[in-house]
Every structure is written in structure tokens, then in C-alpha cells.
Length: 272
Image 1 (cartoon, rainbow, N blue to C red):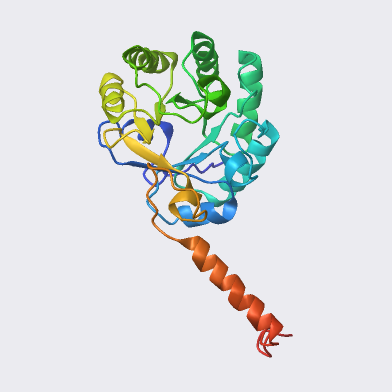
Image 2 (cartoon, rainbow, N blue to C red):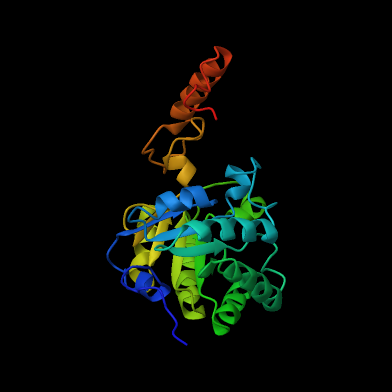
């Protein structure tokens, strides 16, 4: 029986992403549904993250903590349905990996079954590194995440810049190397000083992906809804808007409402 496989030259795999180390060209974006995934699939984006930021962006919650593994599985399945080229990574939500390696493997397996090719895990403590090692051991690629780790928002006291103090910076630099040793194929660096991000990027042999971490990482990631300007009130320093779609959408809905109220929609051509 013949079997077809994705063309490595056309799709981004974990090994291909790792080869982008040192190039500074790894463009990464979040996505939560099939409609946006199909649009992304027509662009040069190389890596897509199904972020637990869905809790904020999709569900309107104050933190990422309430989103569940079942919800992440559904979002991952939706994004996978619209994506064929970029590497698809799914966030492991709060509580889905911290209790034990066995629980982490079970939940990560659900995300891979839904279409993810790798998972992302926050933190660099010895306990987290042990769990990452077990995931990698059974064949599940893992992306690490250091700096501002939103799942630890209560512990760190808010969404603050991390790694400002010398001791904190040294710890983060050490943890990055240990995450690489544990088997992470890449590491997200969130909201840390650019100088520290550059040091970490130079110190590890796997790609770093920055968000609010300066220009010297191997790649960058932003939330899709942020760069599209879908929430005009959300203006963090590290986000660059490439569109102002909130206004476009609002104007479209206003025109639609006006056409309905005036009996101009549907027309004869739009009726059966």
C-alpha cells in the first residue's frame, strides 16, 4: 500500500524550525480558529501557536489560568483544519502538566491527536524540566517559555518585566541552557530586557522566539488579534499594529444594519 507524506520543502517541521537558529527570521503568530488559520496558510508565516491566550482573546477572561485542556484541544483541532505549511504548536494550559509527567504526557497526547506537532510548556524549574524531559522522551516535541510566564501571574505579581535584577537574569540564563538540555527545540522569551534576550539567544543552540524581548531573538511572536487591531484599547509597548480591523468591522456592521433597516438587503439578486 502506498502512503503519501507532507513535502518537507513545503511544510515546516521541528527540525526545519531548529535550522533557523541564528537567522532572526522566524515569524510566529497565535491563532485560535480555522478561518484565520486558512488565511495564515496563504502567507509566509513559519510557526503558529494555539495560545492559552485564547482565555483572554476569545473568552474575555483576565488571565490564561481558566482555559482547560479540552478547550485547547478544540482550538487546536480547528487551527489544524486550516493549516498545512506552518509548524503547529499548542500551549499546555495551567494544570495540564504541572501535577506529574504522566498527566503531562496524557494531555500533550490529546493536543497532538488534535493536530499539533509540538506543545509549549511554561517555566524552567527542576520539576518543569523533568516533565519536559519525559515528554521529549516519548516523542513529544516541546517549546519552552521563560520570562513573563502568564500562568505564574499570581506568583510574580502581575504582568511585569522579568529579569531586571542581576540575580534574576543569571537564573533565567541558566534555566534557558537547562531547558535546552532537557530537550526543548525552541524557547519563547517574554517581556524581558533586550540585553538579556540577546545573551540567552547567544548562549543556547536552539531558536529563541521573543515577545517584548527586543530584536536579537531568532524569531518573534505576537497575538494575531493584536497586530490586526481588533481591540483598540489594548496597546502594549511591544505590539506593532499592522491593521485597524476593529474600525473596518464596525463600519461593515453599521452598513449592514442600515441596509436591513431600509429594506435594501437582501436584493432580488440575493434572494431565491
